[in-house]
Image (cartoon, rainbow, N blue to C red; front, side, top):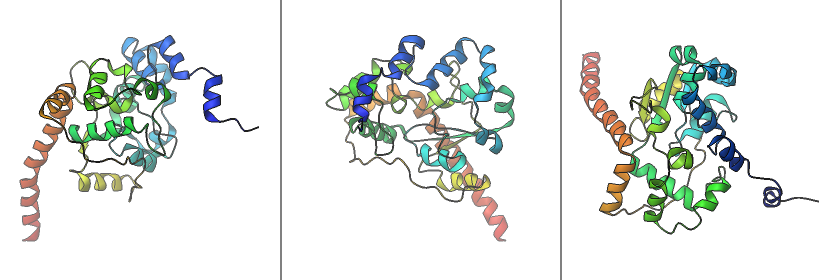
Length: 261
């Protein structure tokens, strides 16, 4: 007799709830991340957990959710390496590898990412990536953007799904706020730079995986201020990236001019 996924879930405890009760975190990645902060030296014994595909490329991609990360991770490493480990995890469990390997992440305009994450949560995920049951239940009564913002404001990072967390949580030192990845690209703004970088690592074309269908999200001035407060570090990171690109553009034009002479 065929047993539905719903029936299976009703027969067995949700592993994420067990994780939460035992380790204070829903997701497996968060368990390791939490203990990387609590006992960093001991966590080095888990260096073997870094996937062979990552080591072979000598390249760490930090997968920030809702920033085309699934497409990039699968193109680089295959279908198994789509986890959401922070850069702190790699730095702690394999410090030598983290230091000598190249590393990068893609960031997105925080307002745009918020709209994408909100649509993802309200729809329960996408066809290829469903929102975890525990967060489907917790967000079932959210009616609008203000409810969603309050949900995020009332919880710490480990009590939120990955799509709700600041992008800085994945790429920065939590104490200093400094990025720990060597390269940052801006989604939609650094497409040519990112494409060239990926080509240098053997990826010529990306398939568009895990897209979410959404309508433009109209935000009030008050809602925008709340988003700016929640994701303040993200706005700083994206602003710094945009400023850097603006400073680099005249230099690139001068180089192109010299090359043309």
